[in-house]
Length: 183
Image 1 (tube, rainbow, N blue to C red):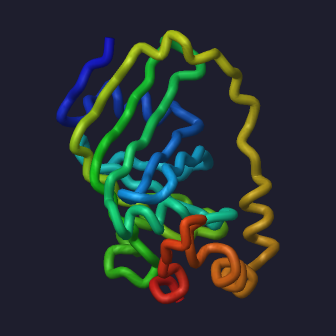
Image 2 (image 1 turned 90 degrees about the vertical axis):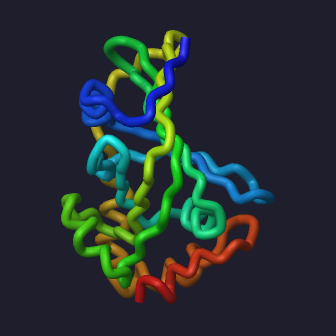
């Protein structure tokens, strides 16, 4: 049975640190629901009520568009090895862009990743665990470097051009403001 908590416990923080993948869900009141898998070394727990994750350039920018209109965000972790567990973090998120005053402070928590474009800062309002007994077991073989390699090859100017062409609005035509807030 699921259990609910007001904050992350040390046990859950340790669980998060062991995970290789997490999933982010967002939506506005009338947009499509977006669920994105995230990997790389891009997630940090700042305290029991606050987490951040570094967002790198991708094919879309749905999460940013959604959060700027409706700050609801759910982050989910699943145990794919070891004891079964599903962990969900529900809260209110904000997008931190490169030009924002607190970008450098928050960015300092990460090893730089090629193509970094935003940081999402989630204030946790509810923590929920559930059994995860139906989640299959998987072996982690290795991370993929394809996105990092692609971003390095693009270079800064190429990434800016890509943002302008592919990342300025969501699939529902919600603006992301990526150019104005990052360049």
